[in-house]
Image 1 (cartoon, rainbow, N blue to C red):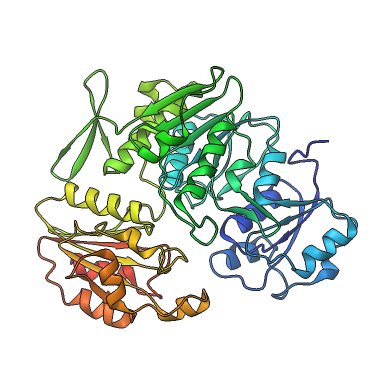
Image 2 (cartoon, one colour):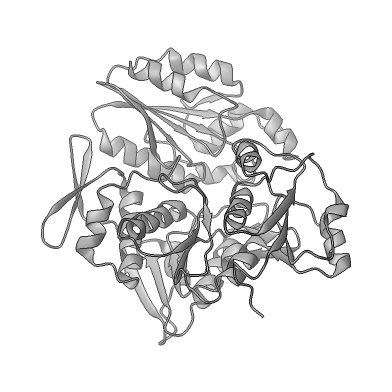
Length: 461
């Protein structure tokens, strides 16, 4: 029998401290389930949020005795290992073990499933759709990879909502299920926003990585819809309209105009709609979201009405501070395609100002010598380009030491500044002349605790 959100009442989450996993725990707790969890380390904000709900484990670590026969199911996060003591105990007892995507699918079997896939833009497109649906008071469930303004949690599961919007990550589902997450949601409406090789530790070649999106595209069912970036060469290779029972919809950047650092969308009626996000990649994201919303019955004029109040997803080209002659943004960008798109968009939005851009290499792929050449000429746009990485992260990820000159060579920019000490990085940035100059900080990390708010305040004062 299919699991509905209300049919599973006793659940244990292994690796409950993860970004999406702790949100799932809170969502299940909110709808009345008895939820327990474990993890070997739990950081903020998960720690405080779980504690407030009474869900924070009494002690960090793995405790097989928590896995009892009366559990309806165990949900295992990607952070756990295949030999996790609690996971082994669950398997020994014959309990149903779900990965995160398996559980979301089971809980949404009776809903229309919209899955947003792609190497970049997933979170922004998903958050755009959620914003529009909420604005028009539509009922929906969701699972998204970032905290969104106006949404308490990153996951919502109810019995009543007819549709669920899911950010479809291509990374592995769990330590015991090596399938990409977005293969397990079984979408009715699918989106591929762009394909740019990532996760080298899992997908060793560009071809293997691209194949995952081909599988996703081919999973689109009869009477289903596949929406895709029609200008992306890699996407074109996997979205060939081959099934006569599937509707294929290509999209490009929304027509627009930029005036005085502000972006306006141009509609079919030649109206101008001001938006708070900018850059060609975001204009493509808007087009993708508009196509999805159209499939869900949202008319064009209603889409644009809602769009006016959309501020963007957290850490996705997010404004930190603005002064008279300068502005500071932070962005989650770290992959080569994201880096290039964000830096180019920023320079185009403020063409008369100097752009100082700083990237932190933080992921396994970005620090891998085999992958680094993918960054060649992706950081040419900024007037001052800076790369930071922490050598200790290399040790933690069991990667070889990375000489700064190797980074400079990979980016193929002779004047690239490379720092491996966050204090020296901060000193360098503080020393810049910020008159008519903007700062862009890009990372999936934290620049090792660099106080970005303080830095931004000094830059824009």
